[in-house]
Length: 444
Image (cartoon, rainbow, N blue to C red; front, top):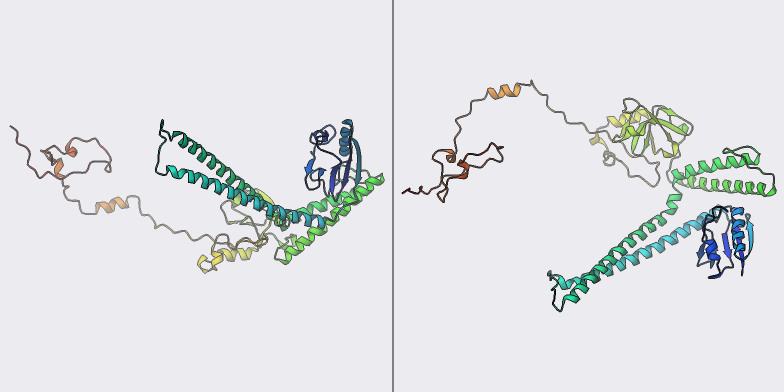
C-alpha cells in the first residue's frame, strides 16, 4: 500500500495526496461515517490531481475528523500521515479577490455552455424540420405500401430530434441562469444593506472572542484557553474577524461615496416617515438599531401609512439597514397636498425614480388622484314621477304576422312566429317577419 498524506492549511484547504486508481481509498473517502464525524465527502480534483475536502479553504479544520479519517484509512492497510498548519493563511482581501475572479471564470464558462446547448437545440430542431418537409402537405402513413417503413422511421427520427431540441433548450436555460448568478456574485457580496448586516454579525463574533480570551462566557458557553494551542486559536480568530470588519467597512465607505446613505438614530425623530419596500410609514418610536412603525401589513396596496386609523394596531421594528428613504412630517404634508399635474414627470409615476444600485434612494411619492364624484341622487320616486309627467305613448302596432289569418311565407306556409310561443326574454323572442307577397293557395 502507498503512503497517503493528509495536509491542511488555511491557504490551500485540506488535501489528500498519495492515492492511486483502484487502490481502495476511494471507498473510504466517498463514504460518510457519522460516528467519527467524517460527514464532508472528499472530491477528486483534475487540476490538483488529488482528493480535497470542499469548503475547507480559509477555515479552521476539525482535527478529530481528520484523525478519524486517517484511522479508517489505516484500517484498510494504508500508511497515513496528518499535517495541520493553521498559521499558513492568506489575507481576507486576497481570498475575496480570488473568489471574485473564480466567479468571473465560472460566468464565462457557463456562458459558453449555454451557447453550445442553444446551438445543439437549434440544430436538432432544424433536423426535425427538414425531415418533416416530406409531410408538409399532411401525407398520411400508407399502411401496406412500400413507403410505410420509411414513413414510420421518419416519424421516429422527428420525435427523437424534437425531444433532443427541447432537452438542449432546457440545458441552455439552466446554464444561462447559472451564468447570471455567477456574474452577479461581486454585486451580491458588496450590497451595502447586506454588508451592514454582515458587519454587525462580525462585530458580535469579535466581542464573543474577546470575552473568551478574558475567560468569560459568551453565546451561552465558555471556551477554555489554558493550552497554547487554544490561545493561538483564539488569537487567529480575533485577527481574522478584525481583518474582515476592516475590509467590509471599506466597502461601505466606497458605497457612501457613490450616494448610499447609512441611516442611524440621529437621522429620525417621532413623526417622520420612512420608506420601506416602496411604502412610506410613520415613525412611532426611534430606537438604537431600528425605528418602530405601524405593522407592514397595513401597507398592502397603500403608498402612505400614517400613525392612526390603520387596519391593524400592531407595530413593526424596522432596522436601519432596511430603510430606503426619509421624509419629515411637513415634507409629507406638502407632498400630499401637491396636485399630481403640477409635479415633474418622474414624480407622477407611482414608483418615482427607478431603484438605483443602492437602496438609499427612495421612490417619489404620489397622492392618489381625486375621485370623480357622482351627481347627487334625488328622492327615491323622483324618476317614477318624471316618467308619469311624460305624454302617454301611442297605440302599439301589432306586427302583421300576429294578425289572423296568419301571415304566410313565400312557400305558402304559416310563419313560425305566428304560432303560440312560450314566454321568453325579449332578446330570445322571434322577430316578426313580413307577410308574403304571394296569394294563398286555393283550397279545392
